[in-house]
Image (cartoon, rainbow over all chains, first blue to last red; front, side, top):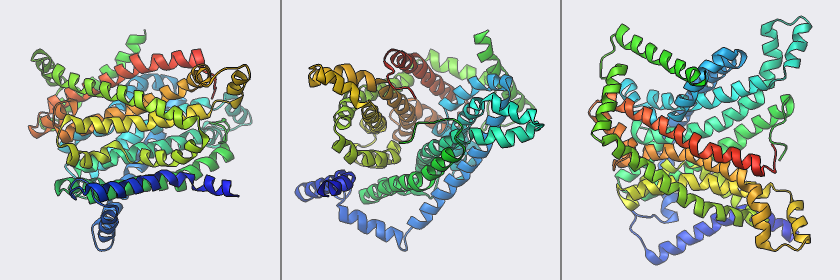
Length: 260
Length: 251
């Protein structure tokens, strides 16, 4: 009984220790607010920003960019992935390009694309799209190529057209891979977004923490970082993981990473 | 055959780029011709500017990789071999993975100013979290029987770590290293852009202020190429080697 409680509480131990250490260090050292804020200051500042401050707008701006960029990346990545996955020569042609552009995906484009799109949402959306696209593309190609040919031939021998085969066999067969691509793609996209917003935007969570550095407000930065982590974790745990799990169970032709 | 297969797509890409530049008459401040990029590249190389910026970036990622490896792997082992520690830290590590290194940049700037230390801190943070996490998962995934078998034959704790945990977890550690390098290289470039104390990120972001598109594009190509070289020549062979040699765990 007690054992189970300890087991339950264990994940909160590091956070509790960190909080305690923070509080103790703050009480002893009393650093200036520009170096390290107190935990209370962070909570107070975040509450101020949340009610009547800029926080709701910043969260909304960041989420909208993430949604827009990821949606674009998923749609284009899946489309290109299906084309390449179903046509060997096209896949061979695209592969070297994908390797190269994947290596410079995301933030590396910022200096060039600022010149094209200026500062603001389109820039951030481009960088997220650029990051998400390659992950979705690679996973889609992999998923499509791993669908056993027997299943496709089965539908075809029963009189299914090419389109029907893709819709009823290849797509569901590749879906688990695509979804795990979406999951890691959004993780990368979230990073790219924060980086893009540091320089390339006037709103958003990245800009919020960057303005914290400009005004020497460590409380805003620490609060903002914790919020960024919390949003990323909430998104992964309550949105992406359940979707991934459900499709793997429903359509997983291919065994992936065994049930944990 | 193989090099040709790799080169043709790039040749087509450059041709299309040239076509767009010449055909649509794009102004130089948006896009420059391939030849201009080449000219800029040779200029940067002959003046030693490129070598200076590139070596700054490489030195930094190398230092960060070594430090993260030396600290991260033992830490991952310590956590992974103890199920209470693993349970306690898993959620926290996941949470930290959600906060990209670059998000800590503003705080690091407040602490260390616009210096190399700031960039180094960010890159180490970015690298070390996936390394700890993957070392931990790698150790946790080793079937207990292997360790128990050795134990029943009288092996000590150190022996078990050396003969079971280390080889068993190595593939996962390398995966973590590879993932960390992917995140870390991007964090490095982004951090260099903002800190502006040398490095390829500084090169391309500095070129932006003067509208030198040719220089930006040279920088981008170098960044991509270096990443591929590091990944293919260093990390991937180690990965194939260890998986082939010690891959106890098949996925």
